Length: 262
Image 1 (cartoon, one colour):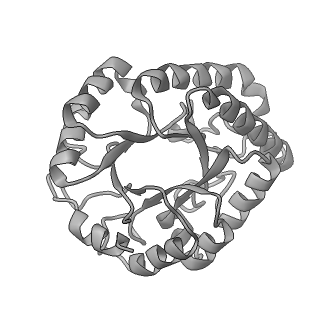
Image 2 (image 1 turned 90 degrees about the vertical axis):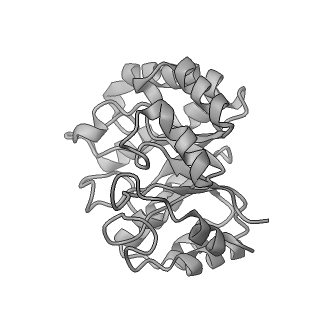
């Protein structure tokens, strides 16, 4: 079976209001959608938009506080336990209505005055806490490595660091969110990244590299990456998280489906 393909509504169709993007994704031929941070809108409004387009929500992130503004976020900052608990409860409220297949807890940046070991231990504990909180809803938890060129100081940046984090967490309910762009930006060979995390990949995102544009805009070997994912036994979703070349540009869904064929 080919992998289903999701549109990241935080990056695709950005010229439209968020509730309208899910229908645009359906009309473009996507099988589902994901949203980085859905919290700008009431959960009920998003639920209605999803029901209208008939697509499932594949993934959403937990709130990350100041991460997108250059701060450390919440995942690996020990003295932000109360803020993390609030973020977790907000994500749970949204998830009860939106029913994503998975939620993503972003590691964040290494905070000033915090040792890396302290941050990683904090992050591992919060990933276990998140897995336990979402277990009752049947929702999986993933954690993502992000390259340090785009986000300097990010706590977990490559597949080896992500592998080490998963081993530290020690909970099979927590899996890797593997973003092909971020791994390529870190200079990794994608077949190596995929083989390292084989059996523990819960979600895959893609964009071309360099530039984080649409497939075909750079030099990333998507066909080779898909072959490596098949060899690793991956059975989840492929999510388009890239910057379109312009407003209204049609996503290359047929090309992506061609790569995703078994």
